[in-house]
Length: 467
Image (cartoon, rainbow, N blue to C red; front, side, top):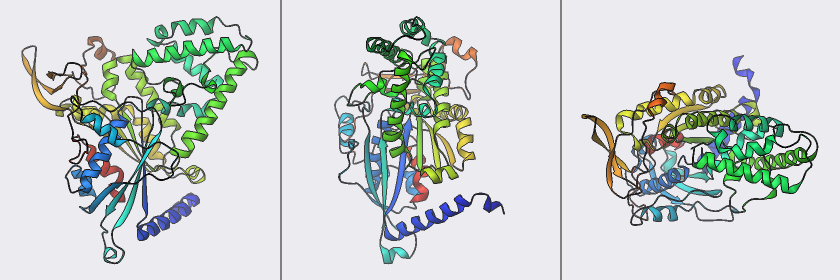
């Protein structure tokens, strides 16, 4: 009788299995992989490396050995699907690889808009059907977008009053309060029923936008909403974004105007971004710059943890009846700490453990909804090697790489990565170094792949079972 507790699940699984089997016979399978993450977690670099290494693997290069094993050595070819009639920009892997091929090499630019790319993976069939039907053709669909936009996801569950209260609570705490001093003084001085004057609304929005930029650029914070204020995309700022939190939201005057703009903004994000794109992906990688948060200090680290929790609460996981009704079906979720090459090998297990502590609640929620989870650390493009440095007369494990700002080779002892969220004493010495390293110079065609740490293991877990 236990199997009857989810009748929608039985029907859905039957239809899904039949659809997958039919597509397999026809050689028309599709894998939709959503790569999500907070701003500056490295999504664009991750996707560039993923595409370049898959293309190389399709030409027989051993650029992704763990994925090769997961696929049973049956990957025969990988090609970029030619552009069709899509109304979204293409993910420009050629331009990103060209940046890595300059002298000196440069990191790909930040993502400013949505972009997509599809790859066709030709895979030899496992069974005797291969002799009859030929190789399988599996389409891998990828999506890139500005990381700031992901932080709008929790707003879908809040009205204007709830969002205002939560946002002002964060702005009044810790270092944010100083960064937002002018904005907080402005809103605290507003009368409760102040009229809806456009000049007043624009002034408040400008002060709020400046506060968010300071929190991001100077303090390293990530939980900053709305995301389109920080990265509006190619259209630039529009009136729908001209709102800000109020301490006493009401039904009249300026408060009513801001509430209408908030509601319109949230509706637009739901209808034009989250529903059409997020709902159709069924494998997901959530990238997190854990080391960058450690380097930025206690407040930024705790901000990252809070942002992760809020995003996970808003994401749909698993194969629940709600997923059946809405079309969502994320059945595997990987939480990934990026830039793992910034710490030596012996500290990477600690990095995985620390991320595991940060995402324990999201993992539990995903597992409870029927989704498998995985915690991993990687470097999408490896730019350091392990080395030994001297600290206070004793040898310590370090990394060696070319510093981005000076172009010189340096050994760096980054400090110790804690196994779990640090106690207050950890922050008192303030010692976690994380310089920016120059990427390795690459072949602009990416023909030999891109050096990485752990990308193959992640892809083996995310998509290997579907190959």
